[in-house]
Length: 277
Image 1 (cartoon, rainbow, N blue to C red):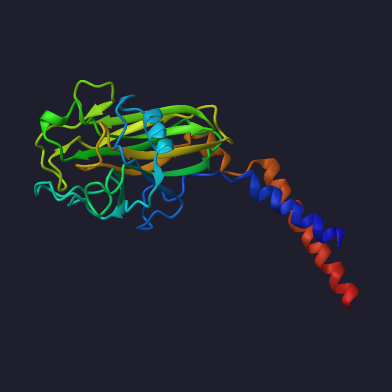
Image 2 (image 1 turned 180 degrees about the vertical axis):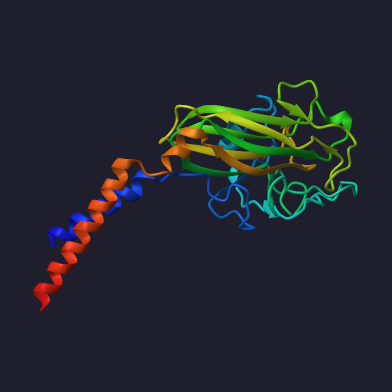
């Protein structure tokens, strides 16, 4: 029994030495939100009226609201809006693979159905990773006279506990402090206003082996729950770099451990057979 236990432990050590956590379903190629946690809320008073386009504003609105089931989805092509206000335009394709995901400030029921939604995932940063990368795009159906007062927004935040490590925000107000803003009358994916696909990277150097949470979110802003804003996201992955890639190849000492594990297992098996006979 001791011999067999030693063999099992040795094999487990070898397997764990080359294991690296990654984002689960980062390109949504399962065709659904497998690996992700969905969340939604509604506030009868509408979206927040202070704070501007940033993750803390979203969190404050969420805390003040009531939980509500979202109808965010994973699509092979973005073509329509929930609120029915968009204009037919070119379909928006994924940036990688066959699917993209979206979070929105409405459900399939349309206006007044929800205030904000999000998807999130907690994962372990691979040892040696330097960058967390993803692609985002914001769509909206407001008219230009509403861009400032009703500055709906969406974004992506990387957190560790209560600490925000990085965030990227997109909105409809061209004068705000968001990272990017929609352009008016683009007519793409069933929406009037849109940003282009934007590739974003967060620095995760030094976080190897630590748990972090990635959240994509969208919310109404300005005291209403109408007119849809939708954040598209795709191709989420860590750039592990040469250090992490090298660790996927067993070192000489790890090969020695493999050999030892095999020898111990074979010896144990032979002894067990002898006892049985």
